[in-house]
Amino acid sequence: MGSLPKIKNHNLKVQIMRAFAEGAAKVGARTVVQESRELVNARLAVILGWVGMNFSGPHIYFRQDIINHQHTIGGRVMPIDGSCFKFSSQGDLWLRYSLDSVFYNQGFYANAGANGSKWGAVSKSLGLTLEPWRFSGNHILICLQRDSGWNAKGFDQTIWLEKTLKIIRSQSSRPIVIRPHPANKVDWNPLLRKYANISISNSVQRSLQDDVRNAHCSVFYNSSSSVASVLAGVPVFVSDESAVTHAVANLNTRDIESPLMTDRTQWLNELAACHWTMEHSLTGDIYNHFLPHLPS
Image 1 (cartoon, rainbow, N blue to C red):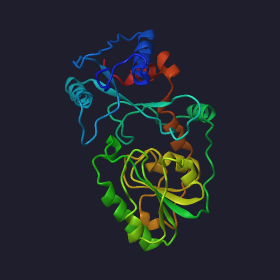
Image 2: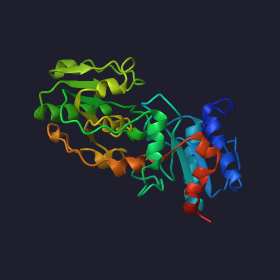
Image 3: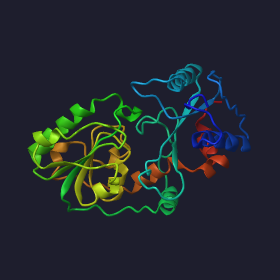
């Protein structure tokens, strides 16, 4: 619990943590719910969130201590992370559970070769569908992200954006729509004077789906929001190998006018298999899923 900024029983994050402990205990695990910021020797340490390149706050320092401690004693860490389908505001709360990292190319999800049953559940719960790849569209959508989050890995978003715009403009004259992260209070309007045919989306009032609609393609650094574009059938470009869409994305923005459109079926089955609801947690299903991969 010390990995959280505040510990109050009505807090949803606290409920998520307690649900995992309750479910694990139901299926035979000995659980310790530790509310103080003291390290406990355990085969599995469950935390909510991860650690970025730059961080502050005692709960974040404690997360780093937990990660280091588990590595030292040969235990594993289970970070609970947000859903890749969070752009849909309907239905159940789905979260990602993994071992040892929140980054999709580093964490262990025990999801290799997953069938379509979990995607079927996610799809039904959230009202999502996988649309065919679209071969027509108008604008190029560039989606920014929180450069202070752990996904950003300390990258300089302004430099990344300038480089991306320069490459895209060398290959295409299409309209470009820049979608800032709603939580980032940065004025990107000076870019309008540097590049032609560019607009800034009001991401506070417009949904991601609104901006993806009628896009020729979308461009991301590594945000999980790129999943919305892939599901909509809009080709995606990503810059970082930890992006959850990396396996079905384009990697070179010089190909902006001729993006590849690969098969997404198994990728989506495996991505959905990373996601679990509170009910899965309470029944011990998540713990049992990872149990074979925990140290004795």
